[in-house]
Image (cartoon, rainbow, N blue to C red; front, side, top):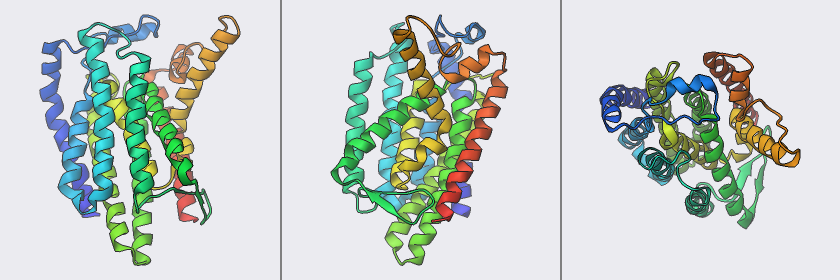
Length: 335
């Protein structure tokens, strides 16, 4: 536990030091947010706010994790690479938006190609890993389900879905940071429990790897807590796709390494709400000749247009996430 707390403190300190340094640099380079013309009118005042702030917490996660979690490198290093890989994809997307003045960044097919390639790499790694394999825990039971070779396409779908869902949730000041912070705290509890169980059964090497993932979780928690200092309403910096795609990769890899992928739609219920609301909105618009279900998608923008303040929506999302995560953590303790 002292190591975990120290990891979080170090990650927090790195972000608190680097963010004030990065802010004027982003201003000078004119790496500012470009708001969508069809977005909420209240967001136009955010035009020009420095973005790509995800660089700070990605760096903090990597440094703190490597400093305190290396004994379990066979899980930790792929987790770091997953966060870094999707973060760099987001960085490329942000860079194109800003420097080439292309509001939507990478083309949709370009994003899909990169996401499929990255998700295939991590799906194959997990499938071949002796610590993970093709089995998944079933909620509230001591049973597992073995997907066999179908595990690979299933995990690819999960990774791509999580990355894009978290990306869609990043639409209000502090929203994605807050929701993911709560999610990762819950995941740290799950990894800690799994590590204790593995130790009790005599699987010390496996327990060490699980413990390294607990360290990774604390690095994420500390870095996001630091980032929220600057990202909460009114935000002085945005994470950009650099940060949101990295967080999506983190959410997915935590589910993979803990074999709790089946829990992800519940623990990440707010991510699901963002993705599903967009799918329903687009489907309704095309199939019902321009008719919409929501005032605007993703769902958090619908609440905005209903008159809810950004901070209120972030609080609502955080409470819902905490509730569903608590139920899922309980599910692990009932196994």
